[in-house]
Length: 249
Image (cartoon, rainbow, N blue to C red):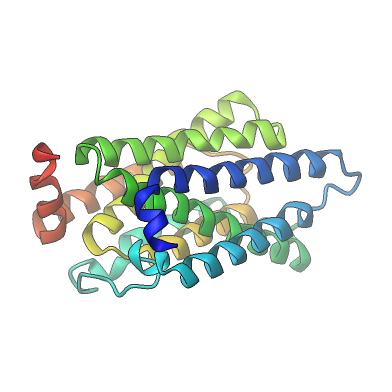
């Protein structure tokens, strides 16, 4: 199965992306139509999809190939112990925690975002990244993955009726955060950390008082992302090596 993935890597990532988008469009519409508007309607299917995907990736050996189960290729100290990427989720709490979110609501949100965070990292910075880096110029790959990940959040507008302006802000923020995750992958190959940070980011945003993506959050995320990437570009050998070979791809 791993050989099949290597031969059809791009198609492989697109199939998982299609399954993920269709699932969330359906569950989002069902949740909106439900009198209770229960978040469990989307949480359980997303969690199950992530579980199925994880088992599949592990059994086929793809999980290690994309950095999910493999050990990081760089020391934690060089990566500044991943503090910059782990700081981003907590910026969502600067407006405070929503006290109206019950323990049950928080659990359903966590269940949902475990599935969402896992699937989005697997698809974009796992399967799709590994597939495209063998075919395209590396600068284009990094830009494309970050941009595709960001634009993919337009599903929020379709699935839950989010306004156009809120979706644009969400796309800008997703590009910044996604680029941070991309930097981590380039430097250390640590997809596990990206999954954890992604889940934490979504969950903390879900229980905070943020009702939409605020400009202050985008500025903070972009500022930290740029600083961290510049640091890695000058300090981390894997990032240097990756972009040094870009012209020849």
